[in-house]
Image (cartoon, rainbow, N blue to C red):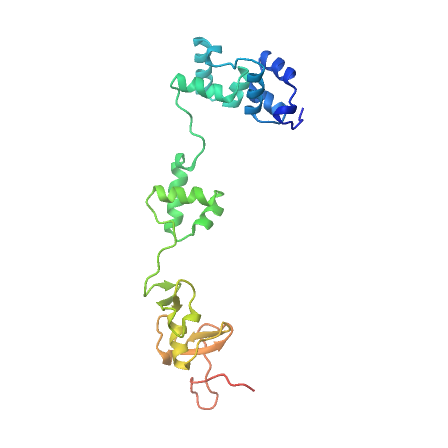
Length: 249
């Protein structure tokens, strides 16, 4: 039965009858597709006293704790003893029965060790989450528990983006329009822009002639349009000079 009724339109007499026959407020709420609190208010308005732990004697409470300890679920116990899951929880709490682990990442030591190993190997948090079929936040939680950095590290002058050196520039700099975010710019692009006396366009790339991406001497840089191959550079076919520029046709 699924009626999706609000509290005012709930069949009060049927709810009272079901509750008196042993069904819990939660089970009745599920049957009528409504909230447990709505059913509880109906019962209270009808003068029905809600059941409490006094329903269960000492032997029944011990049976509930034993069954839970052996692996029974809260839902299964609620159905078995004709009550709500909250009532089962209250029984466990009253009898100081410890709750079982509920599958959180903090309980899986081997999984945490694997996360740490993958992180130390250089994998990003999204990559680790995808590889281990976990959520991003579970991976982040595991790493934080081990004292590992989970946020993007703060850039400083001289930091690297891959193999390229980054330089910090400020809004008053005429080449600030070339910054990649947070005021940082690739050093080799800045060197080339200053050599040309103008900012580079997004289509223009800068090639390291000797292949060393940290060697940003002006003589080692060559401007290109689009992607360029590794270990290659433009030079004049007549004189062999690498000092070539792009000119309009």
